[in-house]
Image (tube, rainbow, N blue to C red; front, side, top):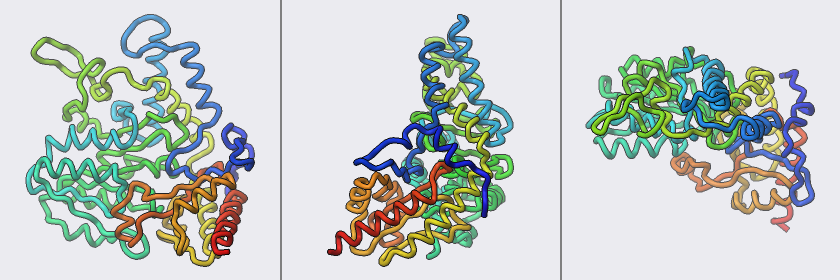
Length: 410
């Protein structure tokens, strides 16, 4: 597979990639945790605070009007990026975690009751598990799970075992942050709707790396984090169908989310502002819009194709290391990340040793402890790639692992 990305030119846009770590040029392979930021996104934040710093939706003076226009325009860019019907379906939050909690609180507590089923999968990130545990415990609902088979794919026959008429919500990741598995969320959405269930898609890993179309998937909710897709920390998105947002109660109360307030009661603002209480991360939200423009310029299909090349090469090279155990499906069924272990070595000692070569990868349970337990392990190593990574960096990872393994064995 060949792509036309000029990766060397792209890398020039990311200042941190020139950083030295222990005398070595940084090899950053922890993109599933957070991505690096291009100079354009960094400059947008700087420019806002230098020239336009003012609160939004508050005043009629010029700086506030400019800030408001840019902040609202960022919502439009997100809507365009995931093909939402309009910007009313886009709520800005701190991250995907907060977005899931919003749905659990504002929709879940109104619609889920005793004996109702919330259908999840065994590969969910804690962010798409713990909020539903809390809701189920509070209202007496039941949690059911689609299992993961030995190849790292969902056992979709499990869905058919659910009791019809009892399912209220299906919540599933589109791309596993540990296995890399790309799940057929469109098919899962069809099944959910056939059984009178709404569906929430955790797209924290997929939206940064794949073309995503919420109307094609026909999901009711989708969540993702800006910091994994070139934007600053503290930026996240909840997409929800307009009719759902209109019916849902506010998540937080306070300024900006109201239309009228008396001492005894209040009336809510229009969506999406009903769910954006208080002063938001304005500069960061505007920078999220700039990050989306950057991704659109590169092209999501090109990013997907290039990352497929990287993951194929990475698994091929890693497989040559004696004693390595690689988790997850074949490259054609996964995104650009790979979790693995080296027999007889603890992931933390490997990751710490790689740091001395300037190589940054993840070690731990990746906020997926139940999945690790399913695999019979406590922790793992994870290398995750983005479109500014190269085959040469994968070579450095393999070389580093080989040196460390040899050094520990002598």
